Length: 271
Image 1 (cartoon, rainbow, N blue to C red):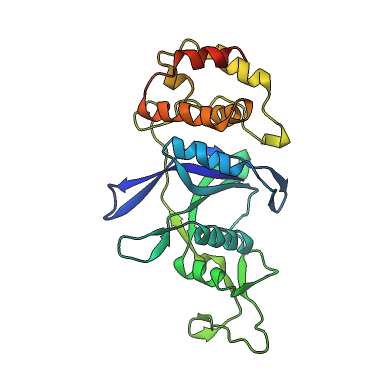
Image 2: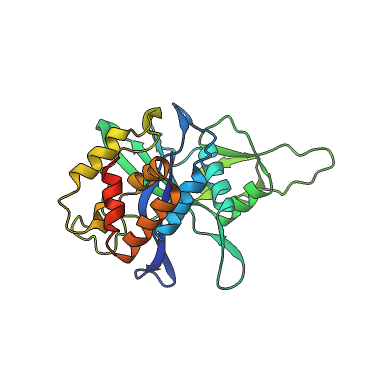
């Protein structure tokens, strides 16, 4: 799993539509399992958020990989995770209420080793039910369940075709989102220009000093110094190799498309 970082913009294809533009993915420490993923404690995430903010980016979504789930859009556990994350990432709507624009992307292994990408959100009703602790565990992966109420507790009724139910398909609680990717040559709106640095925490491995050195050696031919360092995973590693303030300084120059101070570049090349 990973956190998506990007920004929001107006979507010209829909009235009052919002487009989520993803620029980078941060993969936190985790343990991958056949039926899901177990996130581990991540004290580095505040630093990631600081570097992203300096790049004018924010956490806009969640991404995870999955084996082929056949005819199930999302499992009950996945829908509950999505609803909980949306509740954690609320923003003020111009009309007053707090809403979520936090998206979820599933990358799924399909037949013939093909890779499918799907984007989802939990419905507002689902988000509210998860917030109010209405859901419980369910043995059927493709269904969700209302938990058993305590003796003094009143639970809301869930109706399907006019009849009360305790279990229902996850399809009722999810919203499919349109998605796409820009043309390879259409990079004028991209803040980040490079994605060739080893990913942090991938397979439990740490980035190394050789990664840092090879990246700098291999980027000397780029025309501008701000494009040379416009790589999210490099900036994250830089915050460890030196300090977060240096990473933020370079990130700010990247956004403003200003040259990186020559003395700082020379210092980095001595590492």
